[in-house]
Length: 216
Image 1 (cartoon, rainbow, N blue to C red):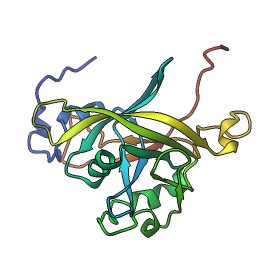
Image 2 (image 1 turned 90 degrees about the horizontal axis):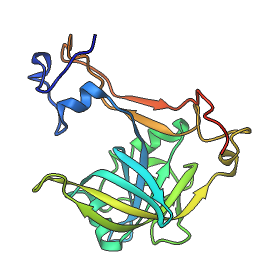
Image 3 (image 1 turned 90 degrees about the vertical axis):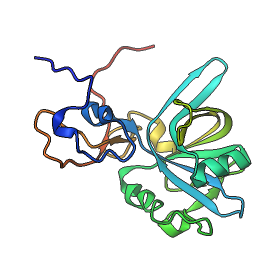
Image 4 (image 1 turned 180 degrees about the horizontal axis):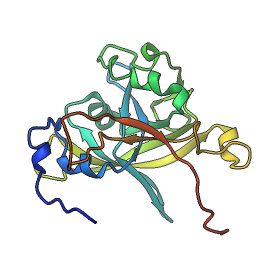
């Protein structure tokens, strides 16, 4: 039997949502995890662990849509100053170090080095990339929009202009991009509104291929 929820369930009425919609916790839709890196105006590397994004393309280009960039953060400020960034995808092995960038978030800090990661200069854009990440997407800023007028966060579109990929990940037979060493996903605080008691957990997940859809 399906349940419907158009207003916040009684069990969640006093839940701290930290600026998110209660619907996000009920649906718990996974979103890819990655680190966006830029140079701050003082030349120090900035690193921001992110989620809530999609990646899509057309014959005209390939684009990253970041749906929740905080306008008061270093990421937003540095992208608007340089118009360039790198999106870095870590494996589970390096997730904890990438997560440490949150604690090392300071304007005078080299946020990549302080987190135990290695900074490399990107090939095309003026931004650092994380050596330990198996996929790095070099990007240029295109546009931004407030989803709701006056919001503290914006939806931002970046054009991907160069791909730097660890060679072993490119062959799906040998290694591939999926499984325990591949792409990571954020499962944000899944809640059962029928019996929520005020406690839940965030999860990091990996992706498993399950059905061959045929050759193209």
